[in-house]
Length: 237
Ligand code: DER
Image (cartoon, rainbow, N blue to C red; front, side, top):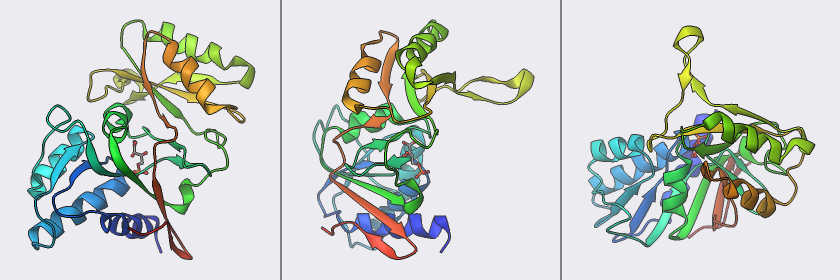
């Protein structure tokens, strides 16, 4: 099975959790895209009714609009029944790294007010400790003096050999900062080893005034559905 096929299997299984009448957080990324497609399909077939979607990015908003999924926002729906979203990393305590697609702020705003948060991943996302693979932990920062914030982030974890680097798009002359849906920048943190206590790291990061939010989703996921060569794991609805 290809990675995309595994993502689709996990996504479709997560949509089994959706019931008519729910207010849903619609995730962002290649795995969540399959789930949003599936919700649109079931609405079209009349198998799901009275769904309201709260998108976690402009990209997902566009996808949902094209599928005819009725949309609203957190101002109108401050509590959601269920969110379905992907993740970049999942540890054994269901802590997540998210945001390598750049949508972590709206994802965390939406997914922090859901009664159920179902995470959908292929098996490549499972890790022992967040950040231990050396892949990025994204941090959303305001553009004002971002280099100052980047340096302070790096200093927070200097004894862990952490490197902080602004996320850019384009090459050479055309290289410029990646800009989020919220007109902010992303600083990526790269760790060499175990971050240690995730809550301590989270608090330290959020105390920096130029930081808006980070991509560690701690103690938020209620269910993780993992699709692997041996099948799909994750408790059903
Ligand atoms: O950027 C994000 O938060 C995405 O949800 C990411 O965590 C997972 O994206 P993927 O499903 O394309 O791997």
